[in-house]
Amino acid sequence: MFQDLIMWDQLTAPARTALNGPDIGNVPFSNFQKKLKEASPF
Image 1 (tube, rainbow, N blue to C red):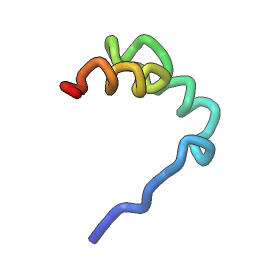
Image 2: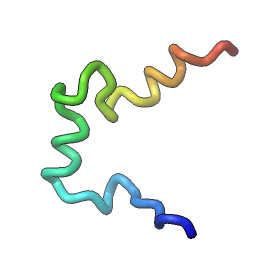
Image 3: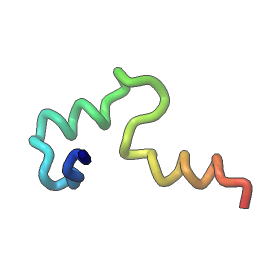
Image 4: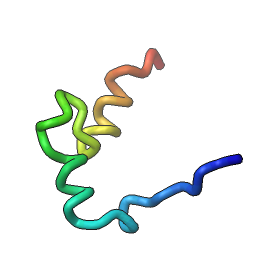
């Protein structure tokens, strides 16, 4: 059993704000691509 994928545009504005906010540490989703590139060994 799998959970459906939720796209960024499907999130409510408060959910996007919460995920982009600084309250979740140093990994807000708006920096995801940058953090992913920094972590890549290639």
